[in-house]
Length: 249
Image (cartoon, one colour):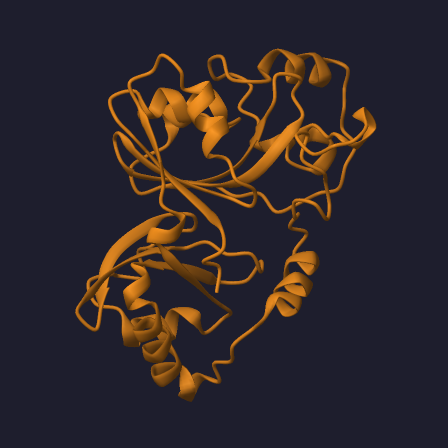
């Protein structure tokens, strides 16, 4: 159950400009139906948080984060014709992870060709008559999907997965199991592997994307974004330290 993630939707004519102003990835290259994994930084190029950005439509994005981020997105969007809506309580999310996850979903979900659903992309379908959005994303390093539904459908979704997955050895997994899997995969966690620049007590606690293995997620050729100048200076110095994580397309 990954419902506790903070979830925000950015809409309006300037939605893409707002998201591109915040994150280090290049939104101008993001296709509708594609999901980005990305950090976002303060003006000094230090990481505030990391999460996913799903492009649901040309001017419609969904952002997930570990920490509350609504105020940051709203503040940096000042002057833009875009709206940031907190949908944390309007979406339930379940992560189905593991080598047999696709086989289970093919028994449960209608309207999605899972053979064509690429890594870090999304698709819309139905389960037992109710709508669902599925992203081929996860926090385990294995084949996996995250399932997004209205809260009133969450228990029915769980029951459908357990029912159809019983023949595949499906088991519920808690946060400890998830934590082991993400560590083995080299995936980082806020407040464990790095400290948000907003919560750091001293300067040395703050980290740039390069220091936490996310340098690959900094689009050096994109237009201006928050922290760009500081990151360009750091890269020019040859900052290559930090551990290696898994790269997301």
